[in-house]
Image (cartoon, rainbow, N blue to C red; front, side, top):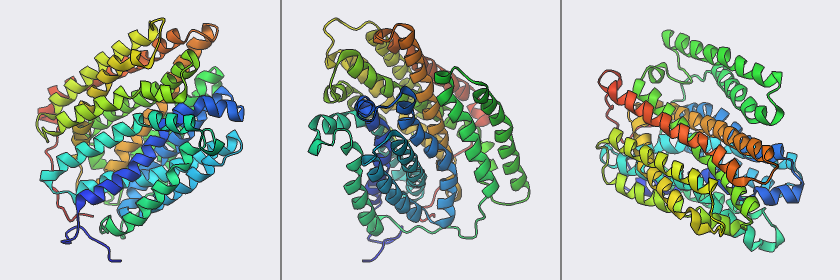
Length: 485
């Protein structure tokens, strides 16, 4: 079986993109599909509240710590190779999750899934960044944005269907086992149709930088996850304080390597690019809001109002439908008016979150899944408008040679934001719930969604500041070549 390369007559970038995004979708959906299964896992394995939180957090922690290093590894060892190896590891870890007999085994298997996901995800955006010609790149990023958004919210529907079906009496386990056939298909087809792009074997990996970056991520994410539930013990505060000098040491090392003309894990040119930095900040804030919201919303619907997993999944369906509509509309604009489109999308998201906070905080006596149609549809529409121009804005100033590092950095901070968001939102939810005697779910949900309102208001502020400084801060897009690495 012959392999295709970018530039070959037989090469179809859209077919390759479908396989890449299918692998990406498999990773992304695993974050949200677990949420709807948490009550079942808790009952089946006798999990504590902290263990339930770690089912999601272990994945996100390993994912976030590995994204930037594996993005750079893809630049050196080959992005296709890293993508397929990551799919293989993720598929194996999914089998271990599906057959887990205890919470420690499930949590460690989820962490292994996170490592596999970290190998896969940076390669997806990096390959798409260089294999599409400029006139097709906007549509490709719009498609990637739709997949990234749907991955966060389609999980509840699929998870609800799988759990309610109770396939072969396996209860929640099929939500992981379903990855096995998908992973095998992606590997088999990917070997043939994903292009064998060239790599830079002479590139030197900054192993000290890898260690410093991963340590900094752990020092931030671990205490944020554990702090609120444990009453903020001294070691949580100490870890957060230690994250500052470790992060500073990482940046200092990258600057030193740049002055010596050596390869950096995170290119200093990207850190000095105002468009890239503010874009990454917006990505981090944006994706800190959504995963945490769906985690507590699943508990709110199932434990608070007695919906079964399938009903809970149906209740969230307006969100992905709204994303599809918003993404279709924004995709027709290509690269035009991206700051304005982002501002409209974020403002819509903010209005939708205020609406959702009001509805969930003051639910009708006859609560049904239809209760959430309005606010979730508005939120999804706003996200659909936002995500494509946001991704394009961040990556358009990244040269092809650093596509892996740029994509890895963007998605690393995206996952750091997700981990922080999960920890903050779930802490707000459970602290308020326990403070109200453990049964006032509307008050807990309203309290938790305060974070989403603040996050999207902050993004609007960053957008306003960025627009005001655009003439001074933005770097013009660099022309890309289809036959890049």
